[in-house]
Length: 247
Image (tube, rainbow, N blue to C red; front, side, top):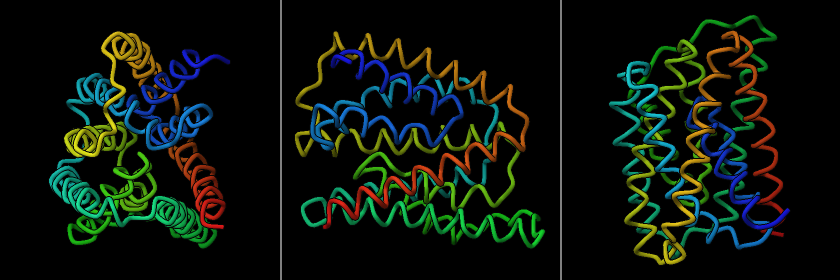
């Protein structure tokens, strides 16, 4: 598979995540890392994330959880600021490992609750939201892998399927905008090219529409199960990648 095809596939995957298949986006950087280093891949993909966010936010402009947005957006922005200030000292592999561990912890807790028939949703807690939102911003800044901490906080609330999808899309749209100046400041945007970006933005837009259609088509229980299984697989991958890099 040539470089353009890999880039196009990564852009489409990013788009599907903004259409509602939230965990899918984390697969894009490992895909591009086949032929470039992960940090460069993160910088190359950020404009594609933002372009996808525009389409995703428009599609979900009426479907979201207001209490979650009010807490997670400013907390996520704070997390990005913290990560930018500590960029020289943060260990990417350690952050990757911890992000995966958070996702695995949630998956284990969710499985235990199901086995014990404890399926009642957890109420929204603003103070917990601040913590998880900051963690989401930090991990998203480092590796575009903010989904596990976000999902660990939001999934237990039992939001309606489309409200969940809209909330994740809008929160990460805000977080990605906050990342743009920080990425530019540390030189991760120097490979930006308008011609390639416009082509990838169009592919990402098709991905957004595809993700939205799949989200609408799937029954609520199957959609949540899909997100949880994807989160588990992603978390295992992140733990493995982090341990391998630290070894």
